[in-house]
Image (cartoon, rainbow, N blue to C red; front, side, top):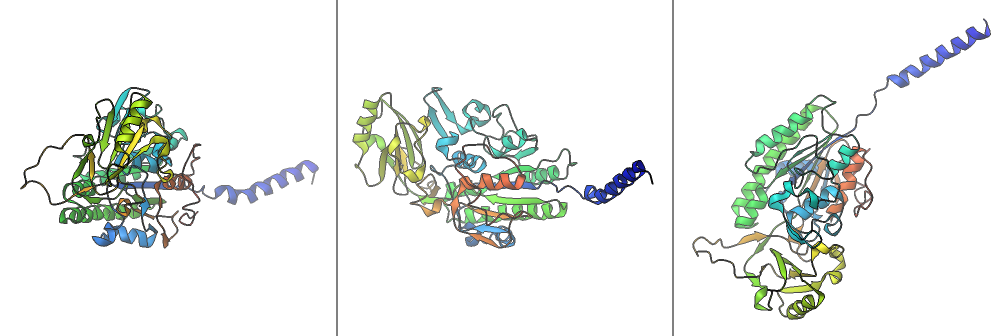
Length: 409
């Protein structure tokens, strides 16, 4: 055998040996379906027999609760979940707020048109920028252009879209050809929050809403299992719900005509034209009632992580009891029409356990039988990014180490 023939033979043998390795399938990138049940309190699943949700937790992971960011309202916490940042860093410090730099009010009712307010990178933007398709069957601000990016599949939020249709759309996306299929999908339901607000967390209406959404989650899980893809289902909520009655009128304590006050349930953000006016309002409110407390922005409790953004205002007033803060008396309701109790949120989560939400997860990247203590919702983003194989952007407040015991390769 010539030297050249020997070299050819050696190359041929090497190629044969390499073939089995080359023939092995490349591991498929996992999928994540992230479901939000707005206003679903940490104890609702057991209390109202949400058997499908409990089964997901038993088969995968369940937290005793998930602690929302302050203030415990819808938009700030949905964005904390999908950015891994506290509101002071992602910038949505309330469902509504005043932006002193832009000199504009932000309101969630126009969220799809307010892309200029969004300086954060939610998970769907991170995915799209790393060439991974995403889809949203609703999620706060997912219908807005953020940094020039939207999910590959999205719709303007429309609360009238039937819940069954939302679930069907998610399953439809997961059945698309591989090149068109999104790997990260969000899904949103508001029923439990609406029921809690209208009639309180202890009402039959809330129980019925919990069981109605539990059936939908069960239908989704069944549909996912039938698709035979590495799909992880993660079910969360943004906050809980507290029975609340009455109100405190801050105008009874001081003249608020020279300041802008944005109130939302138990929290009021005060924007003053100058430091002297801010101090006058602060002095007039501080220590004047056991029902609320007032803080200068740079003196808010450290546990809130709520000081490093001018959108927060100069002063933050927070109710210490289960009541609402207002700046003028609310319109009287006829006695026959007024419910005996209504639900509210927004309270300090360290003082009101009822503000805790939920975290349940199941799938190939979730360690079965994981039971974990309550944790802050900013840790969800790095957990999901790890599953999806995405590189997280800098500036996270959350850490993937917190849910390390839940993650499975």
